[in-house]
Length: 400
Image (tube, rainbow, N blue to C red; front, side):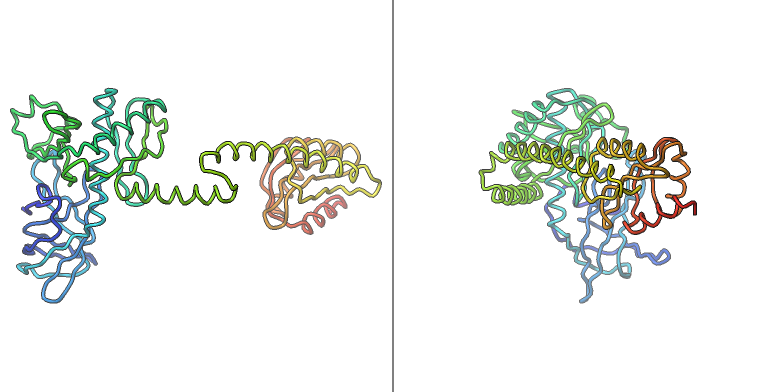
């Protein structure tokens, strides 16, 4: 059985040990070690990676697999490696420390958050995912208000500033009965307990298999990025430590860039953006009305065509109005198309006293159009170009 050094020595980055077994299964090589600093994939946390150095050679540890089930008893570990090492070989294990430390910061931060959720609101952590590329997610069985989320983040960071101890213990069966802790599942092997705080302030006590930082101060910072309703509760997305710092630093750069564009202070951006949005909507409405007037003149002219094709972005209500006028003035099939050859066109099409569904079928077959509607009118989108549209409507109205 491999001795799991990472359980009690989470800051250990190297160790000298022996390879006890090496087997090849197809094109994969698996190695077992006498002692290990490499945490396997378990409990929502990814496996550690690193290297095994010996005799001038280096073999990479790609993943650790847990053998057996904690609920059934003792577990062992094997590692997927990119090379074979003969059993009995002494190797120097080197951990990919930066990745491990980021995970420890975020996992310990999740424990702080979950402990406060439980003690302050009586909510339970019902799901946890620790990603290296996306924010950490924590799912709770209760709904949190915006004010509660803000207070939760503030208190979590107060716990971090207090630099409380984070300790590992293996309580006896008798001690467990009297212990108030989270994650009460039946485990036959020795239960590993992570305690955040001390007798004066206990923030969380939870059964956990993963490595953690040694004190809350090492978490650095905890930032809640979002809080969304999820399966009757709340899903919190968080980042801690170095990853939180990188996120905040990048966000400030974006904020500074936006401030420079609008030549204003960051705190005024929200009001300026709101006004800009309102102005933009007003200008779009005015442009739409002008475009409608121009297109109505074109439709009502004697030389008008059955096809109106414009690069002006028309609102749906304007397109429908133009279509209704067009069908009243033209024989055969007609169409209003808004867009361009690069991005495609939105359309309203059909004909007076004609079944627009037959037109839709041919447009799907010949123009790759997508959409549908009623006998009176069909609508949708097509990637066909203007010349294709003109040729199509000329052809279909000639009966070909």
